[in-house]
Image (cartoon, rainbow, N blue to C red):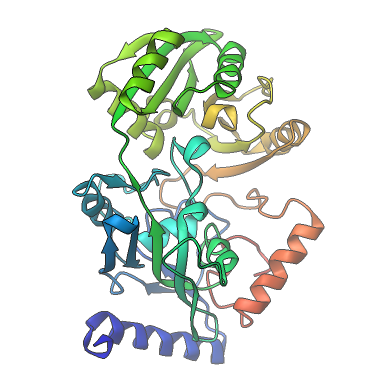
Length: 382
């Protein structure tokens, strides 16, 4: 019975604390492993630990669905899936640094961040089948289900992905999982940024098993290195290797490279110059190579060109935003100068226009009318 479950007892305690906070206006800071504290405007409120809400609720490998409580370590879920030859296809980053195993499933969904395979496999929100949450009044709500056909409230489930805990506390989530691809290969090419983009756009229009890509500049050169990962049926991967050319990367180095991309541990990420912060530019895949303002380093490209990382001083924020807008996208400050501390200041740019800002504010009012959850994380006003 659920009433005998220790996690249920913790849930009741958390719900009571939320109701008390709503009554007296006490802000609460939802946190699991605190692996993404570096992102956002600020961290405000009394910590509300989700880790007691841990455990696998249900796993049906034949149905390709797993249901887990929000405080469950992400590494535990990935190990469970790997034992059955399955995975979270969107490759969520852990960002757990020197203390592995801290990242939680609830934090994964709340952050809505995806890894190198995002462009081909989809984002976190595309794999959220349903979830249970506490709103800002301490009410336990359930949306969606455990199968894709159950769409009741499905948009609300997806809405929680990337909300950074500002709308409610995720307590349980059901995720779609996929089988591990039978074959994989990584190809390496040395080329200019524009040539890499041209190749990726051309390959994207062909029946090739493209799964992930990255291009990073070589120091002191206009050229860089493009890595392309292929995943799929063995015959399709082998055929693509012959057709695309390039240099085949051995499996160990390939795994290290893609993990470095996912966790931002590549040398390009870990060696910023003093005064530089990390900017995230989201643009159409077809956007050409961008001419960066003076004082900027990069870009490092992912997602077949749709994601472009730039190291630059804060003062270059507006030029970078203008550059991204001109290309049909947006720029956001992702990491500040200090590790594990919120560093966006006024540069998060979560609501780029008035209409979007109004929509976000209405959602916040509907789910968290007292404004107690993660106050100031995404918007100074709430």
